[in-house]
Image (cartoon, rainbow, N blue to C red; front, side, top):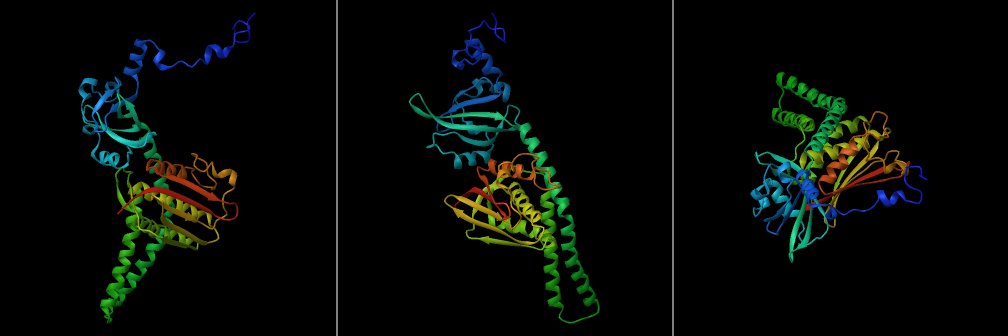
Length: 365
């Protein structure tokens, strides 16, 4: 008699379908085919970066043969900025997996972005570095398109507030020019005020142009206080329309190794979200301080808060609590923070406001 899947009665389906077959148990010709045709690049190097082993898939992924790379330094093929980043942040004393995003040069000289898992292992009685790299060019391109779309959406939403904010200094400038035309005294005082007003317009328009620029992947040591000040200058125009005070509190002036464009995008997303939630006005506190070896940037609003059962969903794509939201802002922000080896934590209680906390590793001065 057969059971419902055509097996002889008394034979367990699991006996046939869930046997745990180790890769090493497969025939050699199959192992060779997997290694040649795989899309993961596997490399073992010594602590100086000399390549001791590289998988046959290197031909498929980068166009090199194994013989071209064995004995060479991995740093010959990694972008110079990524070399500095790896030397700074890869912990040779840590035996756990460590994730990095690095650019590796292929045979024709083009750099390809890889997600690389690195781990210190023991091999031949020595410490070696095992790295498994995956080409994520398509994934990064899709992410950049989403981010650019969200940036342009933000620029459009801020336009009304910015137009209002620019009109005020323009009105002042027009008035002072008319006074100067009539031949009034105290010209030097008027000139100073006019220059201040022009500087104000320039700072607002510069930040608006910054939003519309394409995303980069250029990490440098950046001053967090300066970045937050720039973002608040831009968003204060919209906050004024909602009768909201933006308050920046800085306990420590910290440097973070990051992409300025991407982290500014995160600050804009979080502060803008807080403004839009506070329909009855109030205060938004932006706090920056050092906690252990991390830089904390906290955005605390006085909005209606978020129900506890929805907090875990906020980082999911297309989930939003706003009527006209895209559901992409927080997802993109979380991805950017994760790519900077940081984390985003959300604290909220229904009816008592929300706090969005960004933790990033900081650089000593």
